[in-house]
Length: 96
Image 1 (cartoon, rainbow, N blue to C red):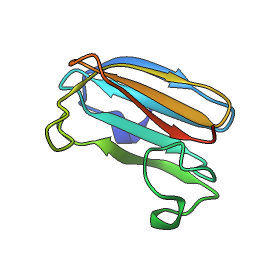
Image 2: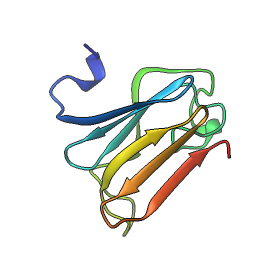
Image 3: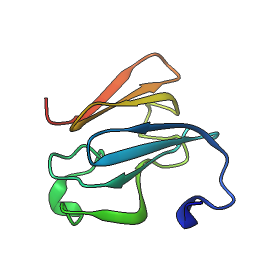
């Protein structure tokens, strides 16, 4: 059980080498783990790049990123995260 996810409706989990992301029912995407390459969807200098431990990083809060809208799916590679928005657009963050 992950303390930071208590009470949240999780739809999907994806794991990379040293990071994970969670898609919530409302389209919000939360990230956990190392962020050395910005794979959590936020700039590495805005977090502790070594480890965001048990503290969700809101990549997409309440399913909104400007006009982009909520997420529908998440996937991770070694140091990259891919988020599919309900509009069909793809958002990619991390080492490419």
